[in-house]
Length: 556
Ligand SMILES: Cc1cc2nc3c(=O)[nH]c(=O)nc-3n(C[C@H](O)[C@H](O)[C@H](O)COP(=O)(O)OP(=O)(O)OC[C@H]3O[C@@H](n4cnc5c(N)ncnc54)[C@H](O)[C@@H]3O)c2cc1C
Image (cartoon, rainbow, N blue to C red; front, side):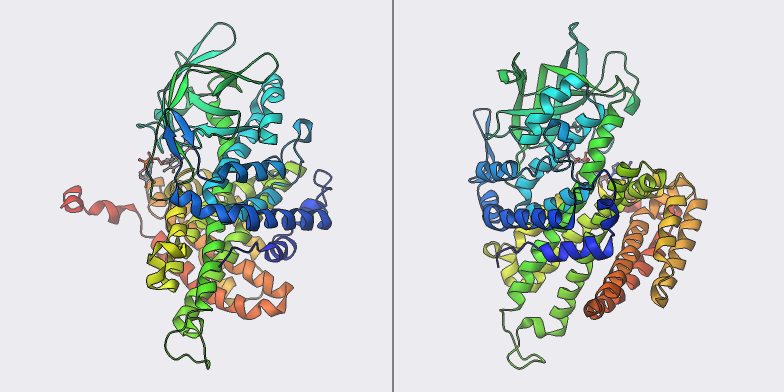
């Protein structure tokens, strides 16, 4: 079944669940009128359906490959990227001063969702580029901005982010790549980076690498890290891509999925780089990019949830097996298949509302500068990332189940969704790290932002939601009293519970706005809240029980 962009569903969530109207009512985003939103979503949806979705299987069957040091991309990806660039979708939320459209992040996320559903491997490229645009806007010098932003926004050049090294994965502070001053304002960058998404391509003139490295005498750990722009080709005096820089793609990884996205091992041998932001403040600058990318990766999970769900429903409407409650029914009329499909719908809706709610908070923070919006966005970001991607993984797996044996056979495409989405729980900070961020850094306010969010959800008069909220409140209070080790031991289930309570409240809002949605909301609440209760029980388990099992027993 071909992918169909869920334009009206996205509009419903924006208008009736996450209050996008508040964003459009700000001076900053006054251009995001209902007509503009409709036009943008319709146009992007059409491109996703017609141009990008046909590329998805091509990328899987014909992975990007390295030929004599040059990356050759999957068939059709060059045209697909050109369509994304032509549509202006890369710089939708970028500053108009450099060619962007200045539109809300919420709309970028909605468009990214559809592009990702159509072809996730290709969509990772614009996602990296968008993150780089945002980091440069926030931290680069005017000179660097003028040189790089117009080309990144137009899609003439693309961007990457280079954090990971063999010994520095989750522990970014362990990185060793060096940056030596050249004496002319530039730096010589030397080191190896691994797993660099879209580290190269054969369809843009230049690839701009944002690289984390250490200046001489830099402090140990994350405090001694600086950020550098290191382009594949050095810009000449007219700003065009000129001679090759001293860097290369050493190899591409062979992966479980996402085959169309070249994942590169990069070698920098005294490559020329320019400092972005302050010396030793690279982590802060990179965090701008990572926060955008974290929500963006959560949306990738949503993309696959939606695509895999559509695919499974299409199959279930067609496949006949055995007698069903309906005369002449298909497998969709078996109670268990119906349960699976409704669970897919319940979680996909929740993941979309959560992602869009997070994006609305980011936009409101930008438009108003208010601390409350900033704290709300910061709290929601790890939840949106982890829940969105876990949902994508779970739904892609259920999608295989709905297909039966045909799900395990590659031709249907159900398996590709499961393989492609798996990495989203790993990159941009594993979901474990996201959960630790939620119960650690994001609770340094004594839980103020979390309790404020619970207050927002309260007062619906819905008994089950109110009970779940009381449980979540009590759990949060308990968590705040524990030491970090105990909090971390329960972090993942805590995040899972929080996401499900939020999800139930979004469903209830939808049912109030549109009574026709009540039966679906009832089913969703009856699925999400018991799951939340179970996760909350796990969140209280504490670290002691885990460490009571000795290493010997673990390894036995
Ligand atoms: C396809 C792909 C694309 C990628 N793209 C990029 C990219 O473009 N740029 C880039 O810089 N990187 C990229 N990465 C790297 C990615 O961000 C890392 O793989 C990720 O951060 C995890 O690091 P690691 O693989 O070293 O795992 P590890 O850090 O070794 O983690 C292994 C396990 O230990 C857990 N763990 C680690 N530390 C802790 C801790 N302190 N507390 C609790 N648990 C912990 C993790 O959650 C995980 O479950 C990519 C990776 C892949 C696979």
